[in-house]
Length: 339
Picture 1 (cartoon, rainbow, N blue to C red):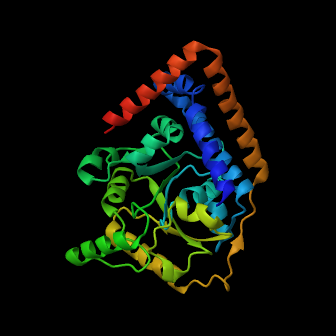
Picture 2: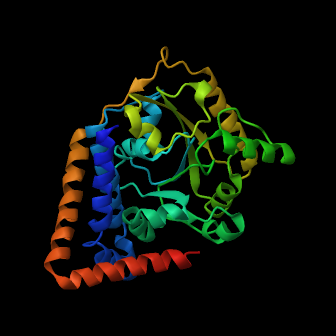
């Protein structure tokens, strides 16, 4: 069993319980009365991503390799434009892999929001609370219920999402293929058919989005013939089955508001399928990314100082216990009525 991953989970549970206690009230005041300073909340969120990447890198030595340093550096460089980042979704640890990339984004200028299912907001209060203030989009994954959330102007530099909506498994692939056959749509070999309706609504209501950056993630320990197995957390924890190398192919696509977005996304996924089909783990020209240890450890220390202070005031002052209780009630009340 992988003890390192168990440590990471306990660390996350510890931080998720106490980490936002000190920040919820100032976040609320900033959000309501001083909205022009919301970028400070984005700073904290970026620090949290970086802190997460640091503890994973420290305990599980995963190396990230990309096919284009030029595109990678362009992606993480300060941008005043709106861009979308999409990725395939092969396993339940994809979230942790993406944290390595977010560690390289400009800490003080990148407004990164994540589109995820509503359940994520419920079970990860730390990220969910920050997401309330930074405009994160939590989906019910039913277009009639999500239409209002997607049909509005959104403030971000980068929006990250998994268009497939869920992890690639044989069972979900059968459902996806059946849907494609009924609707005469493209069937992919290594991907589910992407949920394009939501992305289409975002692009229609945010015409200032400039590019889509597409990430195709490949694991060194998951052979192509085994795609479709459910690679959940338990799979990686048992017998230390974590990958040693992750390969990420990066492609960039210009958004043209007059083009057929459904056809464009289909073409992107055709290319993604071919990338995986033709990829050779033992013979490729991918380049390793140098992890930013200084940024990681700095943000790790700052975030944990906040967390430890939260723990201290929680046990030191009884009023803070009530504040924490009110914070959680407010949080779950928000998500219950979140539209």
